[in-house]
View 1: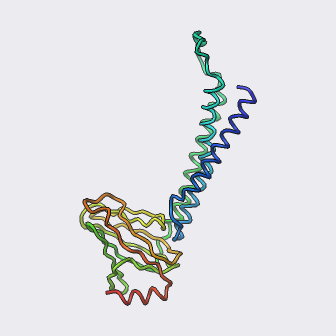
View 2 (view 1 turned 180 degrees about the vertical axis):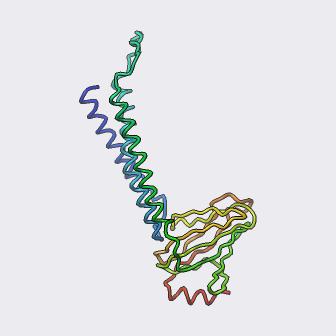
Length: 235
């Protein structure tokens, strides 16, 4: 492979990676982040895209250049020379070591992000969540209040203590970027800190039966003083 072939691979691979990064960023696959943990998730996603897209681009560019540059003419019916041993041992060793380093690095990075999201068990507010086909129930133990929807104070760390009465359900608010399966007979916990005042939609993201698609609930994030007033207006 000549220098111009390597240059072509580099240019084409960079163009592919840049184009995909711009395209993915323009699709807005997820809504705007509304929780502290969502920022960690988005940061990890962006870092993964910046790391993996160049690798994908280089691999795809190598295939394209090889197909175009080293294609054997249809009229050439000669057999290729036999290969008894690889002559690229150094390249293979370097590729394996680089892959190992990349894998261990991603594992370390993922562990750090996971600890940032799940490592702290402190909470300013506990909410008991019960999932049942096909609705959600919310109880605030501190005031023994049952909510019509999920009310949350902005800037306060919330701990959801969740259980399912029948089948497996899953708590998911896209703006919070967190999803937690709820298994019957087991208590599941999810901690997060809402950061943006607004209304969001809670969805069950685990197929749970006939009316799974309508198993939703309104989530309202309010300023702390407004949260106290709204909670007193509940049952």
